Image (cartoon, one colour):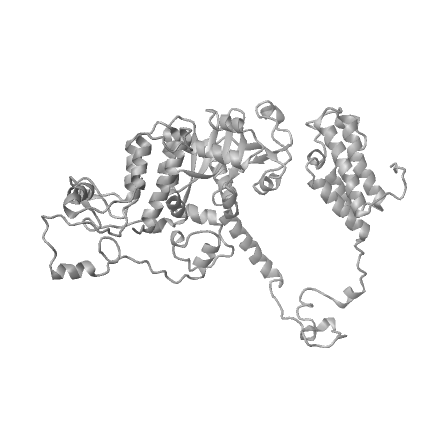
Length: 575
């Protein structure tokens, strides 16, 4: 007896479930063991035996014909699922059958399906089966397959006539014999293709705008405008909706911030003093969020956690969420003008783009003792501007930029692009000379023949200069360089400049290197050594600053050997 593909897949799922039950009870190798659940599943593994029409009539009617209009026939997978649900298993392992063994592939396909593709438009009568259920609709159980199986006809039903036999033998399309509605893909224009390339579904984005834009809009704003994602504020008010979103935020932060203790993240997210702003997608799926602690009586808020899913970072979710966070704080706490956060060293660049700065202008007396000090992080500040609408600042800056460019075009011809000189095109001979007066646009730029006599200032770039730039860049990017990147703030460390007579830091070294203030390699290395010596002089040995100076100095010695940098004299030069 041949077994179809659907029957083969169903029997495979039953076999997997049998193994799970036997493994849970520790009887995986005991082939004689049996109980009520095992017997029920083993019966479903048996192939049906051929029966006579008279003996199978009652069985077929009982299994296939609904006893009442409110019951529906189930496919093999659905009947297997209903049996397991009705048995109410006591072990937690059995619950996984509803999701993993039967509908895992179906859930993954639904995740990738555009929203518009999942919307059905049935009529009032058509498309409904017995009991008023919409044909083809999704539920916790699998929908019966459109393929019919052959069964013995009941005796009280007359045999079909010739017309009915022709109708039965005719190939059917769609569901229940109705014509299948096939969606024909329309030809996409350039706007739809660009949105598709940025990860936005074409059907959700709508028709392309006829007005061209100067800069491609981020996918996050397109999805937000079309309702694919939402930005919602949430706190632990013990409501079911809030609990679901907070749980999603906790999971997101734990995944994107692996170095942070999981218990610590859970405690802060569910803390009643913490507030959150979340990006939810397709219901309550959290794809980004920010957790903060407001201090209205002190005039600032601390950003505790901030993260978005890895696959959505390219869409601009981070910048869009920060804009909404600033607008949310403006509306909810009108007197709150400052944000403070301890940024991870790898996130300093992102926060700088969002308007944060390492220069803390907010009085220390207002925030010291209220926020937690994180080792290895950099405290950063953002000050809100009262007259800026943070949800429209991109449009405002685009208008300002266009206005500035229009003013420049009135007094300059820099926007005019001239064609290249034909003397230097491919196929021309070598040794061609061109009179500067014949270069198109040169006179219009303000050039005069006298400029040919002006000597060009030497740049001073050499092999040693390139090696110093590489070494300084490596030092600035090292994980232990965070205490030495900027000068010590005298407001935070009041007596530092009383102890250290010659302060030095990496940003000052960068400024001196860019302005050719280092006559040779020795002067450059002297300043680098001064950074480490000052740190060890001021800080005790058991501090993180002292240890960071020692590690960074060792790293500098290794890079010096790699770049071939060494002192011309072993004696340190004194100023």
